[in-house]
Image (cartoon, rainbow, N blue to C red; front, side, top):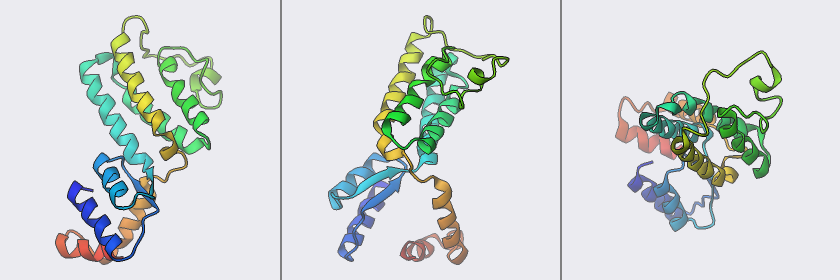
Length: 192
């Protein structure tokens, strides 16, 4: 949501007597602040696919600065999705994320047996590894990103992914196609 539209939408919903108890979104800071301003009792959950996409884009941007990170953005995205889908507690989610950097450096001791193909199949060899000695700055940047993700763990565990949201949007578009008239179709789709 754009900044002004989130605030306007929340205010209109409140004026109409509606209450938001849970909002699922892509971790947009302005949406969060507007939600808390209008509905302070509301809780948030993050859409896993959008969250993952944002993190992957961030790591890919870092890979422009640190060549050694090329290819690791997609791997971190897969780790996030796996952790969110397979964790019922924050400690499990955090353990999966804590295994990422050691795994990328060749240390498989923190990896889960059923998850890591290099751990359960000794014939497979990792072809791209980070060097803990030579790529300290890149690893520190990656570590900072993972620490941020860990802070969001409660909002990612068992969170829905955009597949659910997109299926609802497709149903809305069946009746109100935004390509025909964005302004009128937006009002009609948001009223559904």
